[in-house]
Image: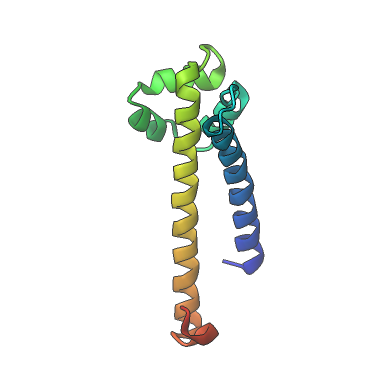
Length: 117
């Protein structure tokens, strides 16, 4: 994996995570506006339907209806969707960083960068 690709992936993950974090913090700090349907739909489009249906304990069909706009996303589910998406991004980012660390270790050995790998 090239360093450029790694940086682009990290930048995109951080940007998406920042949007999710902003929406979450707005609510936690007493904001009265829950995450909008657009943000919740973007979150739903970020990961497979089966992941969301399992974590939200709803059917795949329900998730598909929310994604398509056939049914509105319930207000109480929007924050859950945003929070779950944030945890998915963090998990993926951690896996990516672990893979990069393994690649660096294989390429340069354990003493690269003062032994931090």
